[in-house]
Image 1 (cartoon, rainbow, N blue to C red):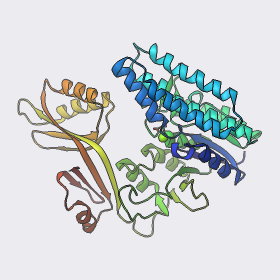
Image 2 (cartoon, rainbow, N blue to C red):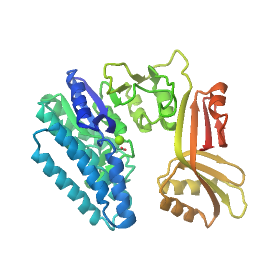
Image 3 (cartoon, protein in one colour):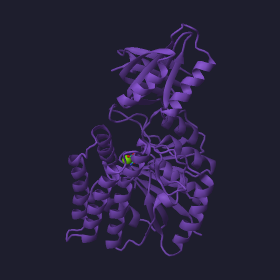
Image 4 (cartoon, rainbow, N blue to C red):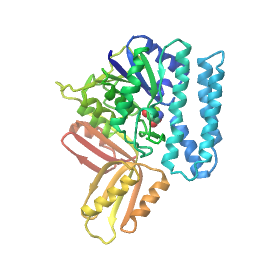
Length: 424
Ligand code: ASP
Ligand code: MG
């Protein structure tokens, strides 16, 4: 079997007819065996989330957003197929009707399960359109459904991959496809349970999907196509001068992703590191440029400081009502609650009589439920609209430049990482 390359195209790389044509140009520019993992087009995932949440809050369909999302896809189809494509038009009609019907009969099912049922349509619609377009330009390929291949448990919205079953599926069902074509396309983000329920791997999870396929296929390497030139030391949204890393070791990339560098999903690196599969981050706007290579290199030059901002943070402070100390037992109960609500803790700090946790702001009703469960034993205070600043490989200069005028709520430093939770 010739080597297989895994490439991931995110939402921004397929957000218009032009962008999809650009993907085909990238694919046609080099002849090699590729499995490509594709996300939902543009802002589709957000729109589907909006439709779902509206239904949960109002028991009504948000037809405005539904039409917006449908027209968005129809517009892409019209631009890809100027003389029309009846099959895709019917497919779109049918799919959006299906979304409405699934919501209407979802009443008694848990939110997270319905979330996966609805939000996964983004990837399914996108890959269907792209596959049809590839067909029309004679780009030979196989379209496969990731929910039939990536086996997961039934932790909806944050499903865990069952590696053994997934690997078997990939070896049995995907490898043979490369005998008569050098392109396989599939969806990122989604998986399926043994009972054929659809699951998702967490927001921005398509990067991780690519890593799962690469691991199981022993891929030669993985490329994540982005709208930036590689892994930068800061987000150009916040910083004027950014530096692109040429090569970064896996260990450092894991840390940067963990602290919130939004360029790669944190779970992506580990499977690749375990098999020493290099990961490239490249720009789909200038595909000939080098990008960043993440591998097992040990950097000869020290890496420069990286700056990571995470906005929309909530700080929840928990105080035992009886003024007893916070001990292991309290912490273990509190952790269990956070795990139950699927809240990932970004920073924590404890003192004798208080325990503070910082996490991405959650929906208000979820926060109220969490507080309700804590309140028999603890009094609670919380703060929203905070920013968590992480400086990886900090210098005193880097800190003072960035932090000087900020109102700091929590500050923590380790040898390589300084974190500041600040008010905006
Ligand atoms: N479409 C999903 C999201 O926007 C998954 C992904 O893009 O990685 O979160
Ligand atoms: Mg996306």
